[in-house]
Length: 266
Image (cartoon, rainbow, N blue to C red; front, side, top):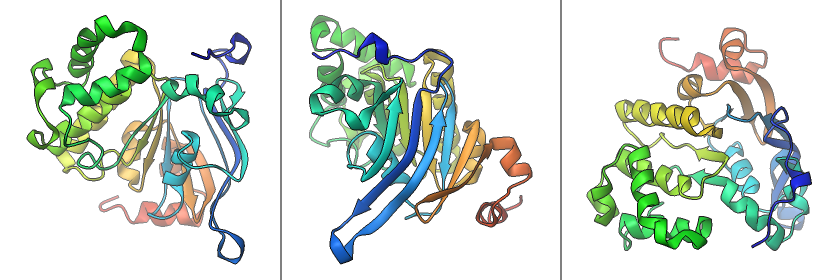
């Protein structure tokens, strides 16, 4: 398996992820649509950046471009000092383990035909093929990390609530021991009380495992609890980036003020 060159691993003081001038387009010719236009941001190690905006503004497209589910038209995506856009599929393979995504819908992101053990083993085949004799211990460890009993491994997705399924999705991402989690609206489909539990779990995991997060959301109330810094997207562009408390206290861009004014009881 290809290894990440030592020269490409940046020091602890440098950002883990640096996105610069990222542009993503769909369609061709007269039908071409620029979904993301020149987006730039960075995420320091062990911290969370909230990426906020209305549905359709391009924030999920940014996340999918970072993990190569979409091909950018321009820009750079530097991870640990290496521009991922310069790598072919073979060169990118070692980074696939280090960047994982948690999806919005816990109901559709798990294969209903697979037990939870089967779902997590698929991740272990990517992350730890050489440790097959340890897989069962790793599975049990990841289940405990997300607050689920190892006995649940033999069950199937339909036997779990939405919040439990999202915990399983998090456990699946953790199986490959990533450095960065892209959290794409991970609590938007959950009840408010369950949202708080998942946010608390993510913050606890960040403290325990040293994770970094790109937390994508349309809800500034949610982002306030987890992000150190917030980038606001409108129509494919980032219009404002500030530390979270500063943004809530004194937003600069009119669109940010509009989003904040829409929060009930603020």
